[in-house]
Structure formats: structure tokens, C-alpha cells
Length: 78
Image 1: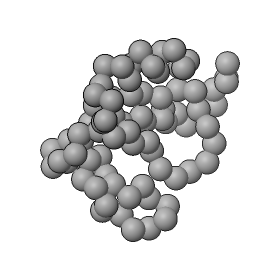
Image 2: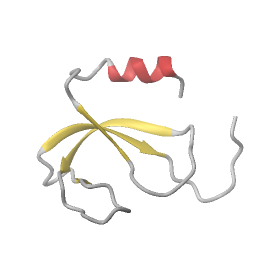
Image 3: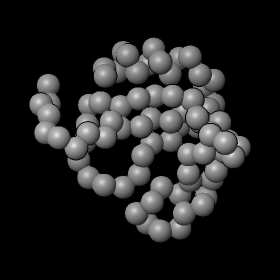
């Protein structure tokens, strides 16, 4: 995804909406999704977890969730 494409997606949301991303693990990827979601804040204390949890049924804070693609097989990085 390019900066231009990300900006076009983010312009659809209120400018004060919180943005959250996946936590932990290493590496980078060019493949990710941006979607409206809900979280339950501050449920994890361990350093290797993100502090909040995505929860569409019980989450009470609406956020923009940027989620990296999870693929286990090898792939080319273009």
C-alpha cells in the first residue's frame, strides 16, 4: 500500500478517531488492512501483548484498526 492509498482510506474516518495496530513480533510487511473496529482497552499488562484487545461484540471504543497480513509461506517483497 502506498501513502496516497492509505491517506485516501483514512480520509473516510473522523480525524479524531484512535488508530491501533497489531502488537509484538518482528519484521515488516507491505500488506495490511485498514478497517473500522472496536476495542476493549487496557486488558493486557504483559509487554508482548498490545494493551487493548479487538472485540467486535463487546468492544466499546471505535477505532481504525490497521492489521498486518499473516501468511506463513514464503513470499516476494516487491
